[in-house]
Length: 262
Picture 1: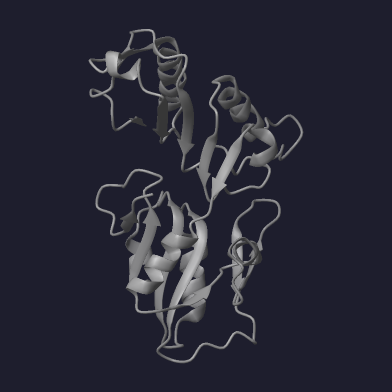
Picture 2: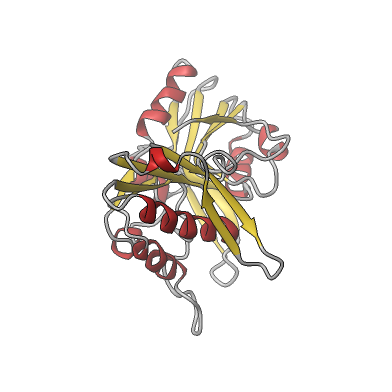
């Protein structure tokens, strides 16, 4: 049995929010079925604090109804995956704190997709990270073949891509200040180029990369495993012929993105 958060609210479970802000989660008419299954997979998009609390409460309800079933948690996008250390004195360790919550829920395995930081393996017990390789290959096949390009060294290492650029940040602010195209990076005019990375938040990396490649007569496409697109997709669409990502995060209204189910 598979239960999805938040998609299955009103189907498998009901969420009640009280005036003071507390939640209650109650399993609905599937209680008898849930009590007899041998395996339960909870698939959750819980980047928000509200959905995280729903996960905690729903897990408690499921354990109470069926203590014998094997229960696995699927977190395609791992919240706090980028908060993999204390960035300054007095800072929280977001990934560790989140991992402590997840560990307390008692799942057999915690499945992630293309987790951002390798530190997650030591902060969450029984974590099993899945690669997006098959999804990226499917995109390349749809395009009729493409040359992969990593926007920085980190993406190169993550996906074992030969062609990569150099990204420079302001160490004090964390802002990207430049994308450098190495002189040895040669792409024939007319090439289909698929830029590959794990996360697109605001999109600055990919906009700057496309701008640096402007004038080379390339057909640019973009794959990001986790599409946040916090600043929308209009600027990206002016630079890339098509944008692809997984369905690890919910689509934004009006976005022009092909989301592939995982």
